Length: 473
Ligand code: SF4
Ligand code: SF4
Image (spheres, helix red, strand yellow):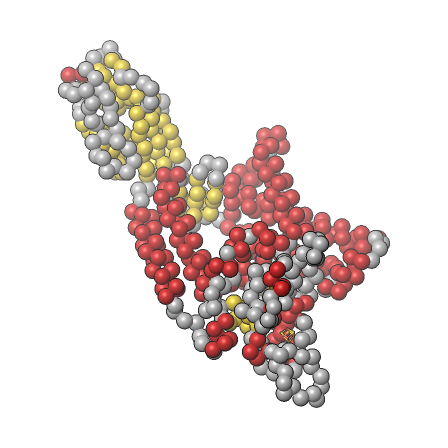
């Protein structure tokens, strides 16, 4: 939506000048009810982000994204590569949810819950205001010569920025490695954790670079979600919007002046001065707008001073402003909702139906059968057991048919909670019991007295494996 006849502002990014140089944004400190609400939400989200790696359920982390070992724990549920189908379904559901959410509520996520916005606006920017003052003071400081005071302020700011970046980097590592492993990296001799320490330094450096220098460019140039807004939003999407019907034609406010031919926008540019991405929302919905609501607060405070109704900039859709219509349940929304519901039902079905202990048996490749001294035919199998529960499991394999024995290579099978154990075993069958060249076998997997899995080589529908022993007489 736009109130301008020409849209030349769309030809370039607001923070890059005609020569392609960066225009540094000095947003004025926002104040108001929306900013307060965002501060409260940010506090709880930061608490969650920093506190979650420390929370354990049954000695397992609440959230873990161990990419290296391909093990994921989400709210206590353990996922392994064997659950890849769940990962695909959950990712599809998330994508459809994001699309639906954006179609209805625009970039609400960006303004209120995105970690980039929260860290930038609620942590780093606040420290900057505290050390260097509001926008005007920051501009003056940057233009001033390098005095002892300026060196002190800049050093203090960047030291604090790096320390916080280091903490953020470690928190992200804690989500990947687990807090115990992170503690080991910190306390063991550095030579034992070269990779871990390198990751720590790299993460800290990236976060410092992003929040000290790159800043809003992440949202306008890097973030794929931001780039998708053009195709996701439509005229019914609720976004931070300027009510051009009420505001135009804009004109400066003069005491006692009649505004018969003017709208309510007094062209004070307060909405522009607070914008952390350096845009003028009065031009219409733009790629750079992260829906941070700072301009709503700024404009509301101007309207309150003039004793005019607030909401000249507010959450609204284009159709809401043009026609005064509320949010409509459009066919597009109905379509995305149906797809999302279907995906959620399918994901739940697989999630709640999955086996707590999963066994995969594969015949060891490249090995022929062996004949033992007792007159048995033996084949070697590889075994993988994933224990997705919170209790250690002692596993026992029994050969149900044909008559024969299973001999484990190594000690008994004890699979710790949330862990994967690999082993191998021989299936030995008396040669007199084998009547065909390819003998199907049937193995039962027990945990204590509980039968937890059955593996039949003849069961073509078995999700894990079809075992062909290829025993020969
Ligand atoms: S236009 Fe308003 S909501 Fe959008 S980024 Fe700027 S201040 Fe935030
Ligand atoms: S803050 Fe409100 S009145 Fe001032 S320029 Fe922006 S839209 Fe117009």
